[in-house]
Each structure stands twice: as C-alpha cells, then as structure tokens.
Length: 65
Image (cartoon, rainbow, N blue to C red; front, side, top):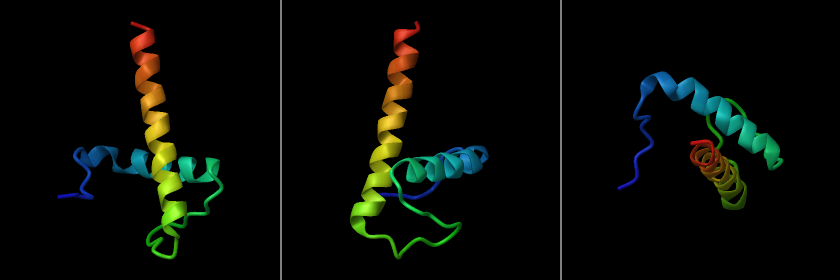
C-alpha cells in the first residue's frame, strides 16, 4: 500500500524544494499545494526526474568512497 507520509518530518521542506526543482527541470509548472490538474504524464515526469537525481546522487556517493 502506497503512503504519502514523510518518514523524516524534518525533511519535508527539503523534499518540497527538491520536487519543485525537478519539476522545473522537466518543464512542469507546479504550484504550492494541490496540483491535481496535472496530467499523468506531467506528474510521472516529475517523479521520474526525482528518482533519476536520487540514483545519480547515490552513484556519486558510491564512486567517491
């Protein structure tokens, strides 16, 4: 079952900034609060960009060890 809860509440603001940055990179205009008017394609592109950046960050961390 999917959950939209932040596991670390202190990280919520940083995650929101990260989401907005990813949306900007793929050309999706997000607004603060509800974004239910986005198409599935737009929402998916934002999520995909976020995952791509997280994987890239993890790979960089591994490479620097």
